[in-house]
Image 1 (cartoon, rainbow over the protein chains, first blue to last red):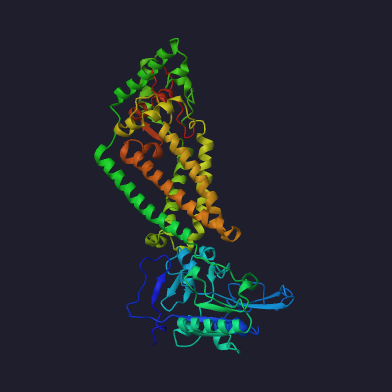
Image 2: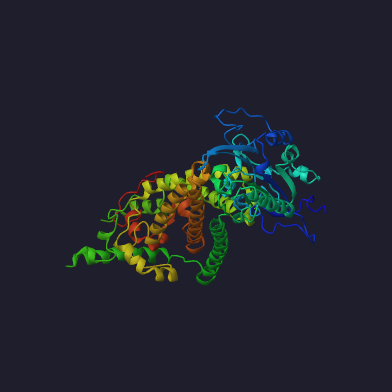
Length: 329
Length: 229
């Protein structure tokens, strides 16, 4: 059962037919954040910084318990804190772990025009390979969760790797390892779904009637799901209610690519056939061509002297834009 | 009316061809042509995974991503400059309407027999087509250049629109290059030396030819031959 460790590529950005898995089956891994168990200690943030050797960045106090206002190119994991007064008058203290959800249908990968800058492994991890990134930021536009962050200095985009280097060596991601309450869990996707569903039933029994397992279908499911106690307050957690792979957008782009290649080749081919059929159009000998040109002038002059108004002549000089003729240079 | 024989000899010897484009016009055209070719190739690399090998030809993905929009601005500015230079010649006229009616004849035979001026209706049409698509490509490219300031929906629509415009310009480009090289011999020299043969000029642009024929029967002195007359 070590196939989740082997980093078979399922999809590689801007690379047709990039799957490499010939094995009979593969195991998909997943994280699960049980928000019910989270105490907001932010150990995961530190562990992420430490394991990935990311620089500490100056922050600002926004009057919240939150470490910093937003994710940055060097902050791949951030706990989002929101205090919301409920209709009952209770205070809901909402925490969300903000980091890549590793979608089954990754909008970032589908949007990326740089071969191999985004890779999806068979175990479900979606990783950015910055050496292939061209800095176009289309992945940011493709992500339904607003996760990737662009670094001006390196000109590359960064996000959580799900500690792919740890996972491929049989270890859980750093945030999971550091969590003191077991709020962040790691296992196979199946195990996490089973845990999530069981936990939701438990929460419902405890009175959290809107408790839900957040594993949105609009992106094909995710590899970091959440157990959300207040499932009716997703916007307050800053979780999109119905995240979707922008299917119409990617479908249109893909259709345009097919149409574009077909049309370009057809156009080139048609031009070639047209050439074979009609060949080169040489002007007649100089004397003949010149005589014709001056004959046209005489005809126009003759037409102009008749009673007909000049405009009635469809190709008379008076009707043209430049009766005097622009200087051709 | 006709000049004395010895003067005619001088005129004939000094003017084997007709000047069609000034140095400035040719530089402008080649600037547009080269920037367009770069934009088309880098566009194919950016838009078509199977063409991503073009990144390597053009200096790598990062280079392409950073240069494509800058070259694009240069392209559009130059196309707008073309409007400034050629606006007068590109106005449509009644002869152009007739030319449009004879488009089928033109495609079949390469000739309409009309008293065409400096540009025929097809050339004028292509000019306006290139100008409009060029400006729209720049406008739709801006949000792709600075994605962080564009709304997500706008960005997506612009990426699709930019792609459609790209395909339209490529189609125009194929036809333009074919007609000016393979289809009509003697055309490309108008963009290299700036000169065309009298036969070419008289056949394709008779009215313009008569006005600029250096050997016009009633012309008595050689026309000015400086680079930017």
